[in-house]
Length: 423
Image 1 (cartoon, rainbow, N blue to C red):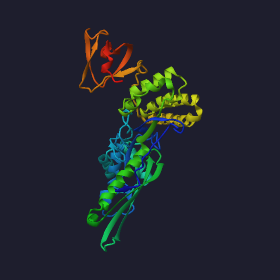
Image 2 (image 1 turned 30 degrees about the vertical axis):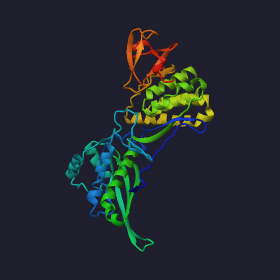
Image 3 (image 1 turned 60 degrees about the vertical axis):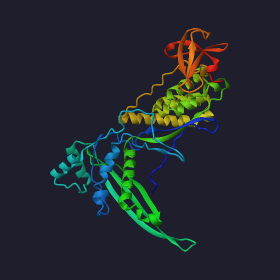
Image 4 (image 1 turned 135 degrees about the vertical axis):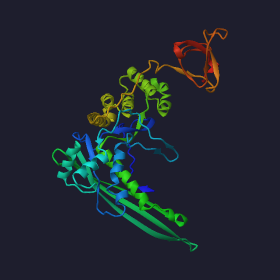
């Protein structure tokens, strides 16, 4: 199955030309509507007019499309999809937690059809803008959404002759759809916005599989779903795939402190990654990479204003590298206002920091099923305070000969023999 309508969108704030990459992360971030209509809070979706009212009209045409559009409007994860790589595939995810990205209320179809019937207008009738405004006032809505839909369906059969003289036949079916929307204001019968959207899907099969080639009945719904998503993205906030590159901290003093950041980011442990970057920045206020990395963490969690603040700091430290990124971050801060005005509330991510972020650490040998004794004193005959699992990291409080004093859960402190630790 082929399509021109799916586009992978990868955004980037950091200018990485002169920065070593430490770790990349792909996730979905929230974009404002492409066309924000501040006066529209409640709408009705009318049937769309078909240029060719053929046998497919009710199934795939103007009477069916409002259902596809309503479904896309109500999709609270609109824009999120599975990320498919060359050898891997993973569920698309976002670190942004918000109330609801669908703040426009849609009038139920039954209620709309009832009003049309009372006005002696059928549900399939094409209304002029004044009629639309009149119907809208009865429904108590701000605008009516309607438009036109057009299909082009082509089938092409070709043959291929092989060297042995055998012939294979191939059939390629293609469906193109174009939908033009029109949003009409109820208050003054004026068109608020109009725009056209297209989608194309095709399928080609040959030989013994030729009979399984996708037909119009299978391709048309894909076009409708794609265009419905495009329209809802045009009028409503939606998620978009974002790829960020966290810069590698190059200051020698901190090199051994960032060894775990890659694993933190891979595991989605943003809080731990933030704690390390923030501790580095607090210890070195002129570390532009640390500041930019903090900005990226705020960005992927939806705090675009805080992103702009940290990129401004990075640009002040190193304008050559971060000036362009700083300007982009400022634009996103503007997007944040639009999203907020729309009614979407993004919850602040809890980046509570640890004062031990830069402390030296050790890790026990073995696996999680292993246990190693921790003593009260630097003496294996002293009281055993705890038995800790293998492959576990602990903060070093002090070193004493063949023992290391570590910090345990609950605030306890004890000594573990160096033979139990990884080198």
